[in-house]
Image (cartoon, rainbow, N blue to C red; front, side, top):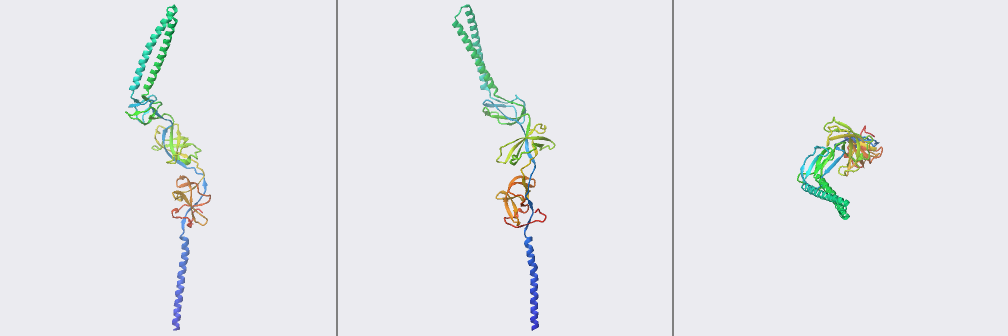
Length: 366
């Protein structure tokens, strides 16, 4: 019996030792798992730097001077002589208005002038006769003075009739719309049969002369104009056609819908292939204000606004709102929101939440 008891105790001891040995490695494994379970992320250290992006701009070739052409009188359009895209010379007729009323006015003015001239001729003859009679004493001074007054009145009537005829003839010319300069018709706003008002735009004329490449650029570039105002302009359809231009004008007016402003680049000697309306690509180098440049993968959205995740000294994630200055290729320039030397998470940002402890991946920037 004692032997059996000893054997039972021995077996119990062995089982206890086995249990301890089995549990020990499991507890060690759990301790290791706590470290390995942390999300491993890469980081970038926030550093301010000057950026000079090579910005491609897309725009079109436009005339430096675009003039609106309108009739100087009201009337019904009876003929149109040119179409959009047609080249016209100064003085060339573009369209006609119905001219019956103006022609009638000219005819009436001519008749009035003829009558005034006939009356003046009679007054001149009467004055000359009275002048001769006065010299011989055969008439009175009163009759002479009356003949002179009639002559002066008829002369004034002729002058008035001539002025009326000139006005009528000028109004007749208003029924013909002519180009004031050489150029290309770029738009038309009238149709045959349409009644137009004086001053109503009928055509837009792109005048011959210097051309501009016109672009829409981000607002940030307005506050940081390029030191080198040279812009290389290339035809979008013919990449071998390139010309150098110079920034001529940056509009101060912001397009609220697109957040852009108009940039005009002077092209003094545009190649023949760069015609009006040609799509072009411009390249210029803008030196923006110093900014924090981080990888695009670091950018996060919080309530619809840009943000990034910052790691504190305990590797806890903190969400931080930022202000984007410019989107670059594969990177983002931040104008505000970071401090020099802060660690910005650049991977797995969608898996983070405030206060989450992470591990910095081996080889990542400290």
